[in-house]
Length: 159
Image (cartoon, rainbow, N blue to C red; front, side, top):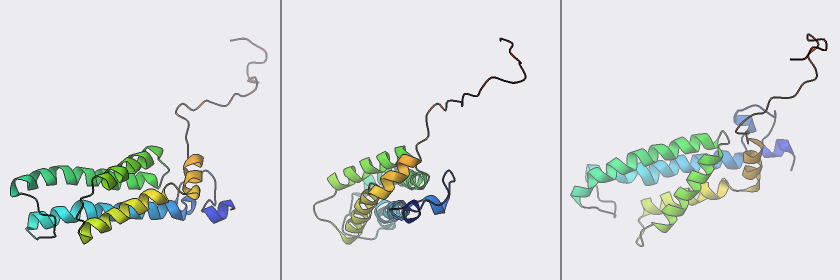
């Protein structure tokens, strides 16, 4: 595949033209998953609407206290995913694994939809086009300045 087919138009610039479709779809899946599996159960539980996964009344404040920050972190990581942040891809992969392992046996439609979106986002961000994007976005931790020739202003003087 050529660079244009992968979504790379101008090397070195950050923008939507350089983000492959697979990474954009992965980020969209992660944001949708945050809404469907992260916030909707909390909203429904606080409103007292039965969606098939009822929890005791005493646990609702704990659900809110954990779900809101974790959902915000998921949305933040999805945003950084678009900029090629490898830490975001690793964090979201761990989140997908924990979601799959921690899924209840009796899945409701809401939980199933969130799980499908989560696994789709995790799969899309590890496709070959996504791997190439993250590889090209790698930034060295300690940039080394380019070594230039002797400074003509010194004219042979030693420092």
